[in-house]
Length: 306
Image 1 (spheres, rainbow, N blue to C red):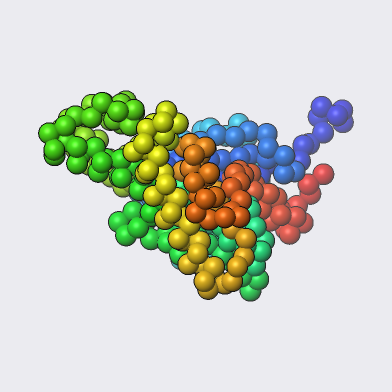
Image 2: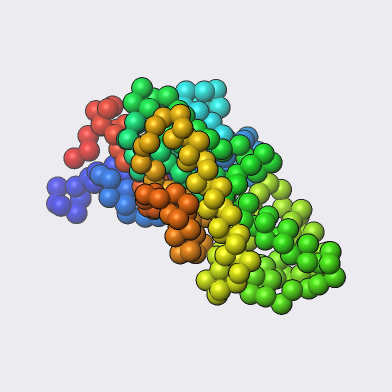
């Protein structure tokens, strides 16, 4: 057998699913060979037509079939009935045995990507927000993460909502603002009249539409817009408060902050550091971490990794 004909090590697939999109990494021996993003996927979506379509889109996007999968999914806990359902759905979509698929909550995946149990507090600001600590015994201590209807202050949804509230308050006063923030909002929504804003805000279910305005707030802040900077400062205060709530229960552990919302502007992590001295802002690919978990699963099953 020539080197070209020799079998290659098996591929593993890692999924970092969420309400704004699902990142995937295909890796060989832990080294990424392909990456991509497909539509949102959550535990609740798996049983819907949209969820099935996302799984099909994922299967079509992969250049090769993986030997194992690990996924972090919002809305489930490892070992739960929902996790079992998700495991089977992923296995069926990618033509794998269920014992080659493992799942956990998206926050558990994020925590393992940045910290080891007991080592610190993860402050996550994506579409939503949460402060999350996993003890050495595996117990979870958290603050926030209640969803956009109850909280998520400091995350992308709350930034977008705050921007729309500011804008609609101006409209109520008979003013159509001509500021950088207003221009950025208009670029996303299509215009600044109420009919357009209403269709944008309520035309898409869930939090995705409003959260999509968070980068607009960041761009306006980068342009010196005072209102946008104030909105980022308010969000930073909310995130710092979440971390302090968890610190009050577990002690003065270091805080690592991550998540897409913190990428909207360099002002955001700087403001967070002002309200939460000592915080480390760090971004890692959680789907890559998931692919490494899948590799560990193969090793535990004594699969030949060559």
